[in-house]
Amino acid sequence: MEVEFTARQVSIPKSVRSQAEEGLERVGRILGRTARASITFRAQRHLQIAELTIKARVQTIEAAGKADTLEGALRIAIQHAENQALKYRDRQFERKRMPKLDKVLTAPPVAHAKRGAQPEGLAENGKLTRAKVKTSIAVHSFPVSTTIVEPHIMTSGEAIAVKPMTIEEAVKDAEFRDRDLLIFRNRVGDLFVLHRRRDGQMELVEVP
Image 1 (tube, rainbow, N blue to C red):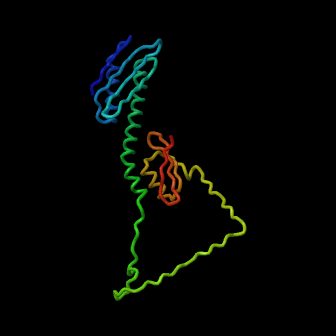
Image 2: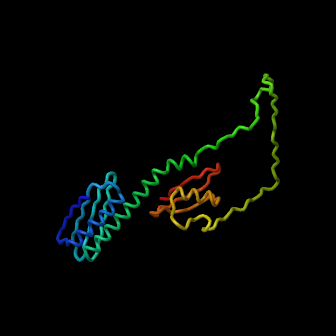
Image 3: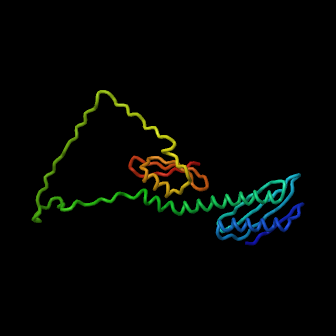
């Protein structure tokens, strides 16, 4: 990776340059193809400031750090950049897997034909007959008093996942435990709510 260093009112030691190159290479491996990176060191009163910019193919990351030393400011800036890169990578991964998951969740049930069933209007000997249609009328009787259904109260242990998981893992966990509601976070801390609709399909809600 091509790294451009800029120093304003400070001098950059070789150890800080090596630390910066190693940290930027680590962030670049997370992003994939990285074109170039630039980092600026400057002083502001008693603080040392490190500002870095990493330009990848479709993403630009900017981060800054402030500390009493150049090493501390650089360490904070690289940590912020690495967190942004991990969050961007996980979002791209989930966005690619989301269409496949939607197809699984919204797939219509397959109707199976009954064995030995004859087409309507055909007898077993193949001759056309007139089908007799029977109409049934359902008569409903309403109770005199309305029955009040007590709501089901779920505990946090039933609805909240303890460990981070992907969307696919959350769907499998909800199906395995027969849950209608599951609140979970992914590996970067984003909050999601997975619940079962009245038609039986699972719906995912991303909490902003």
